[in-house]
Length: 245
Image (cartoon, rainbow, N blue to C red):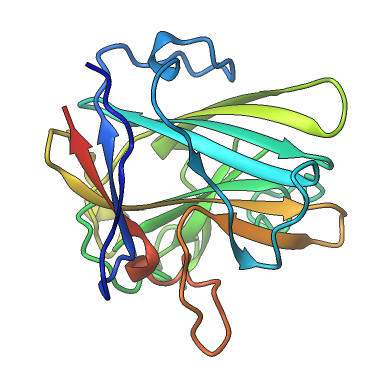
């Protein structure tokens, strides 16, 4: 029997949304091609909530994704339409949020709370060149919290159509790590039915080398002092994801 991602509104609660992710016995090959049998069933979840900027016309940007899991990883298939693709900064640790960038936010124990300069949760920024960046606590990259590579946490591959507006097919394999204050505390988790995570998917849309115009997510975030760009700071903005068999 096929399972589908189901959305449930949680009244006056944080996180705002909860949904379920189905198990797979046949993990996809991470090659940026959506022909794997695991992707042929199930509903899409839209990435259509503006966190920065406004939602444009569909041929400028639109995105959606599917999600699966097994005992070792989460798997995502992300389909994106984008009329301009930008990767203008060679150093992956500089201005990584200003290029076209896929984002995956994970709170392994759904505890919520601040994660800007700790590993209470992780905000993976996945560049077009495959590098994965988040802010690391002091001791990994610098004497203070600073951007660092987390390429060992996530594998990705993408393909695109030949002409604009480009249709991108992006596949990801995401390993889940226990929360911790520093790198020594990070331990890879085995996943099982009933496990709950904080989770969100986003996309930084850039149409020029001047920087990001928009940021979209799959979760509606209530603004604080007019600011919705809270995902990289506060895991309370994530939805709750329950793994089902």
